[in-house]
Length: 199
Image (cartoon, rainbow, N blue to C red; front, side):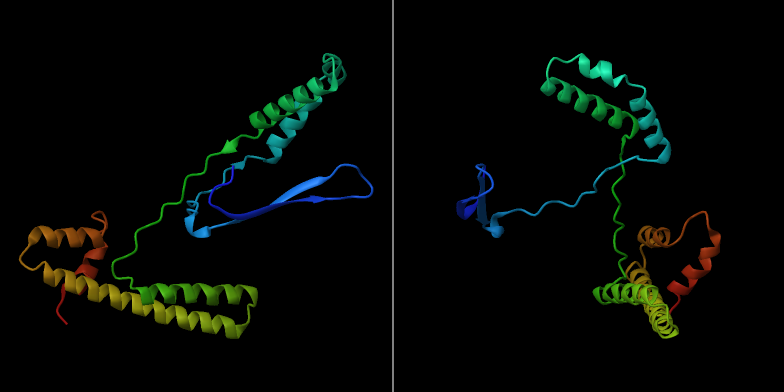
């Protein structure tokens, strides 16, 4: 069934070497009415060397001559063969259920400009990997260091403003503190003192 069809036509291909004709159709759809597919991760099979070896051993243990003689015609034999090999493959090479990647929320101090800079840093790093010259490494390293400094400055400004806005509200202040540090890591307390200090 075709939906949202704007225009279509059907043609037949003629071959001089065969009396079987191939039929095809060309469909033009209205892309504005088609919903984009959601992002998903394709599952894969566990085709490790051990699993493939176990699969081969399992198939080699089958008495194939007796197997095919048990079926009266080629159609039933073929169907039984497909069912058997498929079930064996599914058993020895199961589908791995890979968890979906969790997209971490964007840090509140990460502006659009910083995100663009992060992508530029990745581009420079890939360029260095493809061509590991001293010049490409220097460009990547210099850009990375500048970006790290900008990120630290943006983070510091963000928390200074947050603490200033939470002045007189202990509960909100502690919410901000807990969002910065791990309660089990007291060594980060010094960083908090720097953030709340007046400039």
